[in-house]
Structure formats: C-alpha cells, structure tokens
Length: 150
Image 1 (cartoon, rainbow, N blue to C red):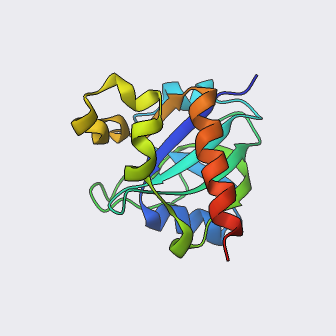
Image 2 (cartoon, helix red, strand yellow):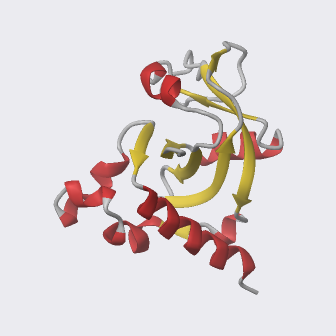
Image 3 (cartoon, rainbow, N blue to C red):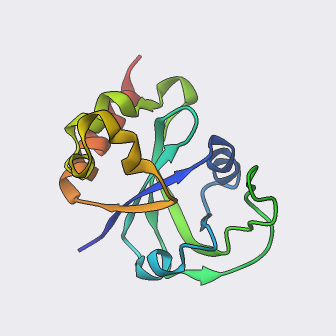
C-alpha cells in the first residue's frame, strides 16, 4: 500500500523537475527520515509555496538515495542541495494557468483539520508531509478535472 506525501517547495524547483522530465525530485537536507520512508509506488503531490497552489502529482519510482549534484535551488539557503532524492514518474503536471488553489481545497482535507481553520497554512510548513489516502484521492480528482478543462 503506497504512502501519500505533500512536497512543499518553490515553483522554480517544480519547473526544474518538469524541465528534466520529472526524472528525480530532491528533498532538503533536514528530511532524510521522511525520504528514507518513501518506497516505489508512493505518491507525491506538489504544493508550490508563494502562490499556494498544487501543481502536479508524481509516483515515486525508486528508494531514496543521496546525491549532492546541484540540481534544485534555494533562495533562502544557497548551499542547500536537496540531497535526499527519489526517482519519480509524472502522473499529472498542470499548466500554470490550471494549478489548483490550495485555499479552496485545504478546508476539505483531513490533514489540515489538525489546525484551527483560520491557520490551515500551518499544515504546509516544512518540506514533506504524509497525508491520508482520502486527501490524496480528493486532490487527484480535482487535478484530473483541472487537467481536462477547456
């Protein structure tokens, strides 16, 4: 049974992954424990900071590995190289005009109910969060609808 993760990161790093064909994704140096729990078949949902949107979904295609080659960037910590990585395969990658507004979805997620409704943004602090399958299915359904709108 897969695990479901929200990956919190910049739109820049999402686009870097997209330009690479979503072959890998990297996690901050503080996220070894979470990355080590990932297995092939797990699902990643990309939450884009700053704009507060969901941009896509990918499937983990490998166990995690460590690599310090500079691929991703951090404006706050220039030395951060996102060393804990997994190979991924894209499931849905939305066009920027189709990104999902998290403000509209967050109140319906089980995961965000751990915080007072007015502080739902706290649910997206940090780089990686495991979420229930029901939340994944809700976000996936919304993404599929967004991907096919004309």
